[in-house]
Image (spheres, rainbow, N blue to C red):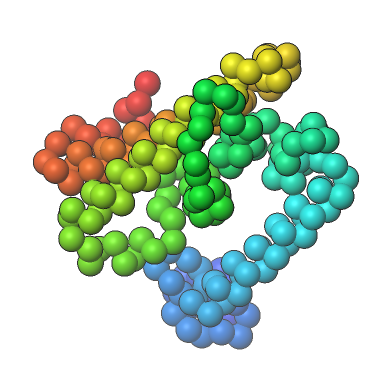
Length: 202
Ligand SMILES: [Zn+2]
Ligand SMILES: [Zn+2]
């Protein structure tokens, strides 16, 4: 019989890091060991940075590659997603945490995956977790509100219906995220129905 254990597939089944020549155990949520997972993340970050620089040079949206207004940092949808929608006169909120949030958001894109530092959260007292989650919820509400205001502005209303709808959806994503943080607080405080299982949402 052939010995498959050194193929990628074999390493995966053996629960060894799938990086060639590495025999360390993989991380729980990864096929790679800590060291190689870190290297892979770093490579991905670098290539994404390069891609964004390239798109910037081509005057396209650095985040999705589509068209954007020359005087805007990104396309409307990405502006709202990154909470960089131009603030209207009706929104004076000062936000010094935009970059931190944008970082988180990228981790967040696939759903409600927690951002870095989740591991530490287990050791924090409930009130501290509640405060963090409520602060995050508040921030997401602000971002959603700013996104909706941008959606209703002439700049967006003159776009095609599809592209305008994307801006609205990006704003709503912030609100959905806010609801997620609030659900966490509710669940932590004894509300049983606070976390509808995936698929329950209509
Ligand atoms: Zn490894
Ligand atoms: Zn974009």
